Length: 265
Ligand code: NAD
Image (tube, rainbow, N blue to C red):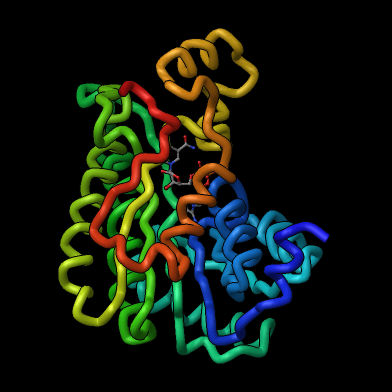
């Protein structure tokens, strides 16, 4: 029996971990990993219900417990809508009390490309809405549901440290996430809640599919700048999130953990 199955036997219905954008990519890997760690996982998704169902199935096949719920992060009043959708699914599909959240992972995000001269205001604002406003208001409404030992983990990016002018608007959103992480950690420390961010480098997911996937020349160019010599995989990021969500990670707060495999050191 492998280690993950052993962990699954320790599912704790009081330990809910909610992961945004968990239908695919890094979010899916985080959801699966946190389920292996014993959390009941709320699998948030935007519109891809079949993909979200696959995340839930993957968790259940390993003996874990999860439920999916949908909420478009680009809508006004996202905080309220997100948690209403969550609570309905948690109660109906999983039969659990949704009032207590142990872990919230703000993973969902978009990358829209363009230099400052070539980036529309509409794209700028949409990206800001999904990458910054949504986590802020989702956290705000989550706070009454989190107790001592709670964990908030935001997915940032290496682009706050390494300049990529062609995604300047995206870098701005992740810089905001880092500032949010630091400031919120100070504010929530007295409640015993930690707040950290994880900053991936280039990870092989759909967000990069248009310029990266299948293009060996580009992949070689990217990995030449990575000390560990390869692209990141979603599981690499999930492992770091797992540590921050764990009891062992409880003395770390207000940090942005670089998980780029040593990119541009
Ligand atoms: P992805 O495109 O595979 O996943 C993004 C997720 O966000 C999807 O599940 C998508 O449905 C969700 N999402 C996007 N817009 C949404 C909306 N309006 N409403 C609801 N859900 C929405 O990309 P990924 O690589 O898995 O990205 C996950 C996180 O990691 C993002 O925050 C991204 O910025 C960050 N990141 C990724 C990389 C990388 O190279 N892949 C590097 C650094 C940081």
